[in-house]
Image (cartoon, rainbow, N blue to C red):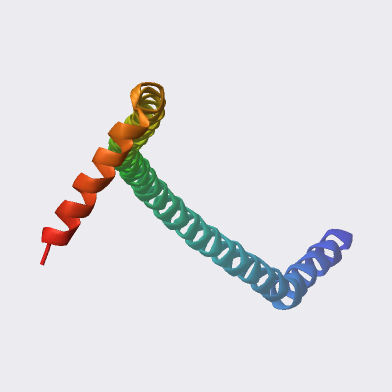
Length: 156
């Protein structure tokens, strides 16, 4: 009989376990499965999002590398253009400075020639005056004065 009671107790225990414990265990396992499934979905979405961001960043990086190369090339061309412009302007300025220097040199030569001519004329005049003083007699001076007066009288 004790075996029968034990069996009945065991059956009651199984019935109570099935009735009370299994639904809770099933609900717990079901919610746990849903949580894990949701976590896996969220992880997959996070992974997709991260992969999309990685693709976007790689695309941006490739575009930036292209833009960097384009900017570098544009800067190089601008630098070459600026260099050519500066060299051209420097050449023009050098030619202008050279022309100005030549002009100033010619002007200084003209001034020097005029000054030399003036000095020669003054020296020649002084020499002529000295010669006239040394060789001209009072009779010659009288005759020159009369000739001068005669020529002035003829002028209308």
